[in-house]
Amino acid sequence: MWRSKICESMAGPFPQDAGQIVTGTRIAYLATKPAEQRSDAERDELFAWWLNALDQPYRDAANKLAALEQEQAAIKGRSTVAYVQQERGEPAMAYVLFRGEYDKRRDQVQPDTPDILPPMPAELPKNRLGLAQWLLRPEHPLTARVTVNRYWQELFGTGIVRTAGDFGVSGELPSHPELLDWLAVEFREGGWDIKKFFKLLVTSATYRQSAAATPDKLEQDPQNRLLSRGPRFRMDAEMVRDYALAASGLLSPKIGGPSVKPYQPDGVWKRWP
Image (cartoon, rainbow, N blue to C red; front, side):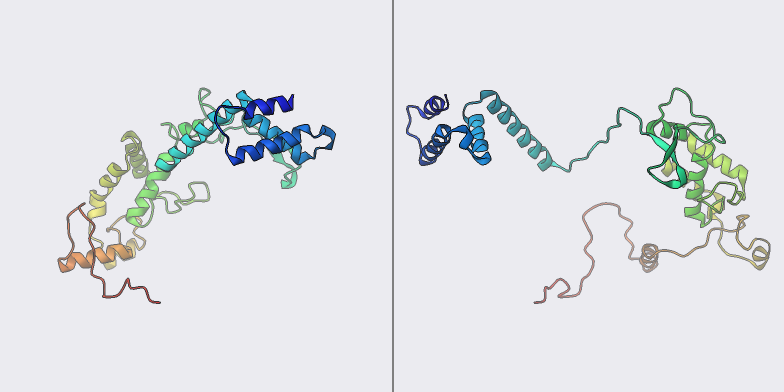
């Protein structure tokens, strides 16, 4: 059977090139060789030839795979590929570990939220999506407060809660709790709009007041926790540069346009041997 198939595959109206003749001769030799005398490499070689030359379903599948690989290469060549994470069908299991040993599992732990915080509604999924939705619910007391406190710290140097990373019992109490509550509600009801919130802060009278400190203010409010004066802290390098350009009249207020090429000394980009 092998010999007849080989002869049929090599028969045709057109002359064959030297490679086909050599391959056909080699395959004919392997086909006539007793099966028990063929090595593993020879059996693999003969089987690979059979798949590519005579197995039509295999060739169809191989052509389809090649087309898909070519399409995949074209997609990757167009732009950067962004991978999308897919949740597993079954939930991840977690256990209480005896003395912290990873191979000594005890009671299984179910996903839930701390009892001191509002409970997660039953309609929310017990995964990361449900956790995100729970964090942004109106009755959640922490998310908006922690966020606005950090934004306040960016502008005033110190948060309304000084310990911005600890809102728990070991953290410091807010200096203005009513203000913190109002800012949190304003931020949440404003659609969590960060730009709008920062505009609210920088246009406030508290932020725009003078940073000058009098002896009386330093005595009664040395840390400025009562917000008796404007924020005062060191500027970073970019702000120092912009202030210097503004003071010298060289700061351009134009936004956008072509890139600005600052002065460069001669030979700064020269490649030395």
